[in-house]
Image (cartoon, rainbow, N blue to C red; front, side, top):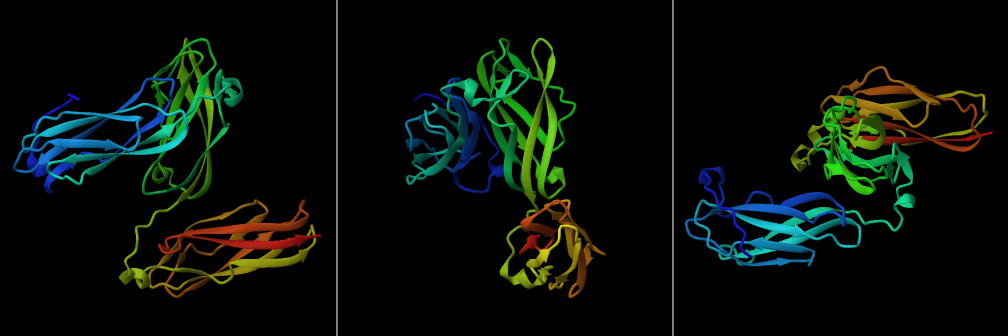
Length: 353
């Protein structure tokens, strides 16, 4: 194993001693077993006053092969360790640990290689059943799941190019939202082969909360330009950092008098209105970021979105049961700046005759 890359580094950039790793975790994204193997490069700095060297590298899987230099590394120099990942047959998310034992730290430093193994289906025609301009997808809509406003989320979407010609992602995308970035691997997908779209979704730039849908055309190039409609779903929550115990009683707090309301038996033509009282039991101003109902049949009125400390505000909601019958459940969800409970959902029950 004779791979190395050594350059000078300003030692003042790192304030610790030992081998300092640029990254201890690398995500190599979506991995297609039929494509070339993936490489990941880990760089480390010798932040000691003596020579350092790697004694042993242990991986928890034969699919990860490590190449490194066994030569000594002088102080304030950077070394290079390369991991070659050979995809396994089983698909799904993976996390592989690499333990690097050195003379500086005999117990070892732990590195992690992560990604998503996308298995090759027995019948691409059946597996990639959603066809869009010659490209086959597993789902028409892609659910990004739950995310928080403190960091973007990445979704890997595999597809099959059923066309007889290669395609590439258009570098000029006129209709993608500013909070979505898209890359394709490999950059050129040959005809009758697979590719992976890497979608990065930034909920902070989306600037909204709750369950959201996005639809936009994704532009590709072959002999000419063509678009493929993309449909995304996501549930976004505002992120609040962990709160020290000493500050628990120093923040706004949303108290809802009734978390479950039973309207009882109602007729299909009777619009029912009720009052739901909100209270700020904290010492600071409470701001209602957003209110969401799960049906257009449920409307509400709230006189203010800012509730002072100790203040109560009445929300009036109305439920129109027209066109409905039997046991019914509706919800009102509140998003607020209460860091202890930023999302609260009230359930409204009824039995429609």
